Image (spheres, rainbow, N blue to C red):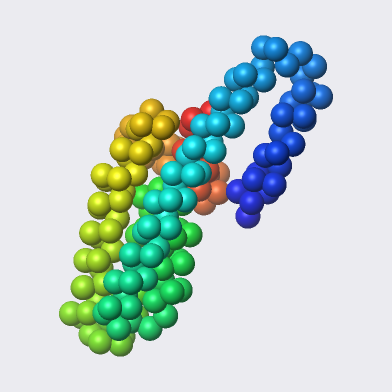
Length: 165
């Protein structure tokens, strides 16, 4: 919800900064860098999250687990929370796989989540983030811990953009 409000305000941010600070020559270029970095982060994260959600939905559908679109959507949404979101997204379909088909199918669902998140979380996303934003995986993880401690779940969601600022 907070991210939605921030996105709604993004287009008028420069005008608000100009009104608040008066002299835009010194501060507006810095704010523009921040805005560009946050936009790049959100674009990369959205691309990776869409791919994660689609692959999860396909994998869960192949395994015959009920509601594959919901599990793909959940994986997409929770992928915005670095590291922990993907783990949280895996719990319901793994449990449903266990309830529907037993331990073997639940393990297959879990393996699918692990593979998708290892590939995207440890190879694709860090490479894209490193190229566009210059952030290491360690910095992303430490920012998740710090901002999660300070602001709870909202801090976890906004940890990377706040660290870039």
